[in-house]
Length: 333
Image 1: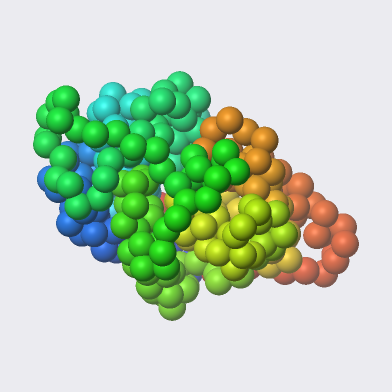
Image 2: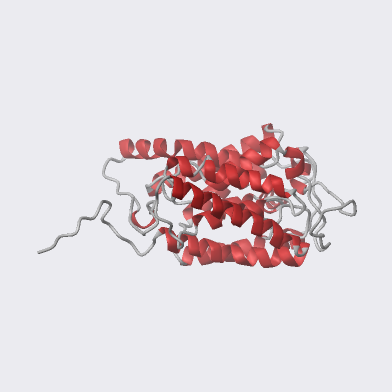
């Protein structure tokens, strides 16, 4: 009788890296359509460059590490899409490429690749670009004004409402503008209605757990309601904080990354709560607008500590099986 040797892990689930990343990619496509409608064909250029850079870097790293090329692994493409959705529509392409290179070459490949990374690659790439090119990362354009492929002097740059919030001002945006994303902001992360619809899709597909974004958004809303500017109602302050930037996008597409979150339900809830509190602390004390990605990176580093705390508190807890980090073949890590 012939025997075949297989290496661990041996547990398989229907939720593999490929299915989770496929669902994430599908949930990002509607944002691209809306971005194209608002800003024109430059959206396709920024997204194409970002995706292609991440894929090439991932393939090169896989070759150097002598890993078999897996064309069904969409994690690098999803990283490229997320980065392109979080940058301004008129961002220089070299900023996007630098963010992609940092995401794959620093935050993903050195830890072993898909499912093994300690930090969220997209968050790492965006944080790197924010620190190095803070001026270019926060200059936006007016929606519904098509941008040329090659930027020229006709492009008018504006500040987004998040800059107004950081200065203690009041961005006078109506509910319709907040829901439709009809204000200067990142390329594809301000479309509240579409992001909420995609959140429902991802929850229904079991690609993410509902309590992760909810546990993140609740402390953000509570702090915004308590610390509302003079002349603004608590409800309006909450709406501005949640919807006048990319915070909701971060909660849905970046905070819920299964490879970088804790493995227990309770520790994930604590993880989301602390990430929300830290995001608001960074928003108030940091000179940079994009505070959520820095909070996520710090929480990524502390994710094992959340699990250790919960194991000490409740020794008989069981990890969440269907969202444990998975490798390229769908095996549980």
